[in-house]
Image (cartoon, rainbow, N blue to C red):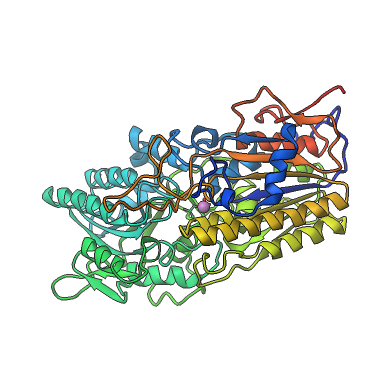
Length: 555
Ligand code: 3PG
Ligand code: CO
């Protein structure tokens, strides 16, 4: 059993308020016109870099530093906040699914056996994000699963696609659908009745998160389960091409469509006796759909029909809720997080963000665990996000409100740690709207300033960092770093995250003058932050945590 008592730090005093700010999607990159953090007015963040070289540095936020399969994997909020909170690097969903597919273990597991029970007479439905982004899902994993499932007895398969354009370039959906169609064609040649059955853009259909807008999930349900959508097409390639041709259309927000046969009948609604797998490995944007597919009692929207199916997630999305109860691959077991240690050592903790990032500083931070460790010592505040808009329309989002709440919490004297996520750089960066992203970065900078002013007032300490890059680079580039032009000679806007490192800054009146960043941890990454924060609260970090970034000098 775990010894939760943290030893006192030999040189760092206790009882300082620590303000912990995560700027979502805020990486460090060269200064050019597509670096929105550089071109925006961000005087506060600029001053940290300029004025305190020993207390500002860069840390890795992508690839193996956050448990992703390769160094070509950009960072993301799930793995980023997991690493920040857990202080160790865990092999993440993307990697675990790769192992299970490569070794064939997936097909020996309970989850696959459970869906396999339907293969005799039922259809296997695969629902998920169709791209090679590697953030929520990966196309090659879907391809392997299609092949493996058919080799293990699936005779009728329907794929319900969600187009991306957020973790990959906008417009790439067409190519992904073509690739999938080719694979399905190959399966058909082998006698498997395999088709795409429905689709829609990920931000408009199915993949909402943190219960921001159930209508998104309902639109998916109607198309995938009921076979009903405002658009009907004979082929998915045609669907995506036609819907993309509408003014202002993009992959992220394509309306829902169903594929119909020559009699105009949907080719793949989900019915009694079918098997369903949601192929995303990442939880936040699939857990709402999982509830709709699994819960007998459910009132978030009218499901009209609740088919008796065998449902499995690619992973289990919520370990507390045990949801879904069946899954193909076990999720990473992220235990003994810094949040749990600190609360068990009496640190009164406040966490806050707006809805679209709320689970990041709570659920992901705490190792994919929802709820409090100790409700007497913790308070988590969610500020409702705007619903039904794209965030370039409101690029300031709720930055001021988050700043206000954090400030209140700091000044109240009721908390030892105040932890917030400021979403603007990321959420607006994902829209690809450069002007709006600048406004977003400025708003984020102002919110940080508000919080740090409050920390100054109470004599506290601050730690400011980010979970991964996004707003610092808004254009696709070649290896040399120059913007890559498409065949019409136009730049290609980068809506996704990046491979860039992120800054971390420490400071505040409570930080003793002899504390600074170590010089010998050049390879440090997000997982080194937890031990750093534990130290700043006056404790030694657990021995197996990645090393702290700070040192206390003699002078
Ligand atoms: C999303 O889910 O919005 C993107 O795929 C990834 O963004 P996040 O990792 O910053 O949440
Ligand atoms: Co993001």
